[in-house]
Length: 49
Image 1: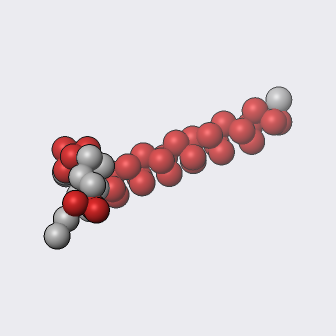
Image 2: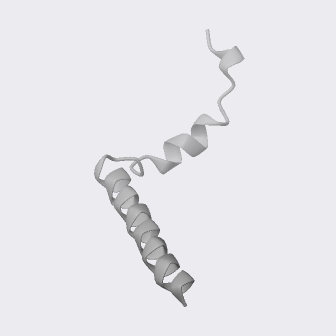
């Protein structure tokens, strides 16, 4: 029973940490150009002049 009392706050803390990091990434524009990253992988750098 004491292990559940320890693991539940740890799980909630990790969940809140993940949610906070997601909102931080969203606020700093990490998800703004998803199509550019998908197209960039197709460009071969050897063909550029």
